Length: 209
Image (cartoon, rainbow, N blue to C red):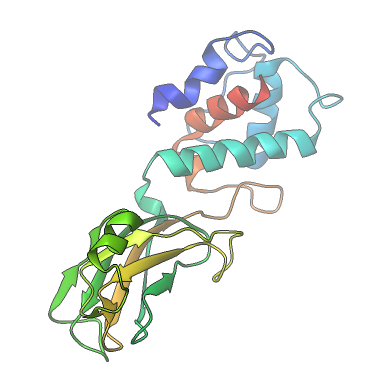
């Protein structure tokens, strides 16, 4: 999603007026939770009797998730280091993973340094054709997202499949984008609200139509 996509819901269409001049101009320097909530009410010209905090919190949560999924933001980059499990062809992705950026596998089984290779991302169908019997072992070359996400915890955020199945407990480094702590009354600012406040506001307005 580019910036225009994020703002299109608030600029066009009927329903609540998200594009007309609000009672107060939005803060180009960024928003806090409180000022963003007020800006949403000003732009929609709807007060708290209709737009309760429960509703605006949902707008903010949905808008943040849309932006985080569609725009790769460097501030959300993370990585984890671990050991593959010999004879196990799957890895659980970290808690809160939005998407995986890449996977490095090292020749070492004790340190994530030195010789390594980046796994090539493929569809799961390619992996199953490559190793139809699922018996090939060695140093992994490919990975595919294989689903399984039922929540946001360390064991429920989804998993990836690797082939060949690791023949040893090779060290690996998984690079991914994680969803940061969302904006709320308890967390009054975050990177998005401070650095892309106008986009966040328009995305929230788009949720309100």
